[in-house]
Amino acid sequence: MIEPVEGELKANGYRFGLVVSKFNEFVTSRLLASALETLKQYGAVEDDMHIVRVPGAFEIPLIARRLAVSMRYHAVICLGAVIRGDTPHFDYICTETARGIAQVGLEVNVPVIFGVLTANTVEQAMERAGPPERNRGADAARSAIEMAALMAHPLLQPSSKGADASGTSRDTIDPLECW
Image (tube, rainbow, N blue to C red; front, side):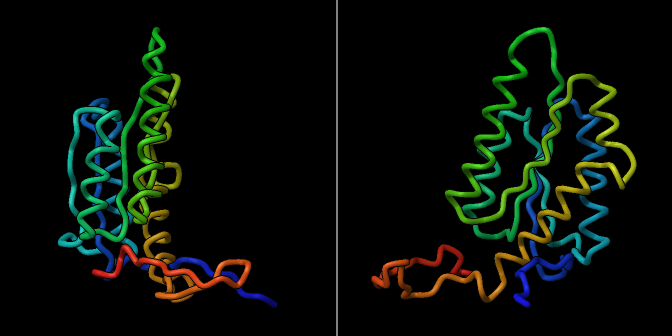
């Protein structure tokens, strides 16, 4: 049987940057507390976790990119809460925040985890920021741990020379070689 490559839920030795929106802080503070608790539960130490607070969800991708390109972190966790209002503003913020967070991870080759709640009501947001078993901050932290471990796995490391599907040799660059 072929064994799949999976990331382990062991955070010891990994560094995490957390970008947290101040807007809707009554929700994001709960996401943050649960994320930090989860990281510690799986072995992360406080010196390996750094929190940066941004005004709102729209500002998360820029700071996530700054943290990711610094190469100080094995994963960046993005936490925010956008609650639908009476205008289309919700749709624009959600779309661009999600797009920006995904783009950062792909461009920088560092896991950037989407932990931004998009809720129709305050009640929905609070439910998703509630107990640890349902808290999306805890989910984001577990994803970050698993992705950090996957990125460190030997089978997923770029080689200095490889071959494409046709057998043609190509050079690759390891953007994480500073680790």
